[in-house]
Length: 168
Image 1 (cartoon, rainbow, N blue to C red):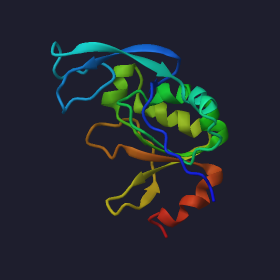
Image 2: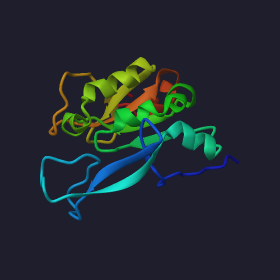
Image 3: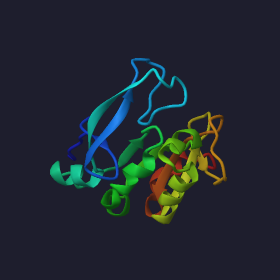
Image 4: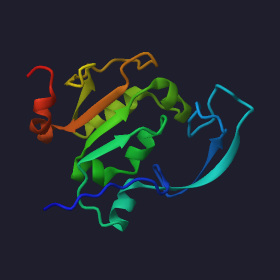
């Protein structure tokens, strides 16, 4: 029987080991790792530890990852920058959020994040209201009103998601 383990919590994941000052508001409706436009002046900052996913996997002796749910309020590209081994060798399925409004706080765009997955040999899919997946057509902009939750699947793992595709 395979050992299953879920890893959550711990330090904030990013592109480097260190610390980061993040906004702390107390408002339950606002969540961000960068100071949001909404509510400026109502935030204080707290310092949190940062680490990289590849290092966490080495330290915890994690040799295989099947699925990563990545929703870090626009810092997805930073997390991928610290997950080279996970992205290129472990090849998990990634569920992630692609929004220009959140990635803009990190001086990047959702299209750049999508490019990181594509250049690593992943195909992109989006969820339909039925819960099925359909191939994602890359576009120039990813506004708030768009279907922003995408799935990246390593091309060699395509067969593992075929039953979930709307075209079946």
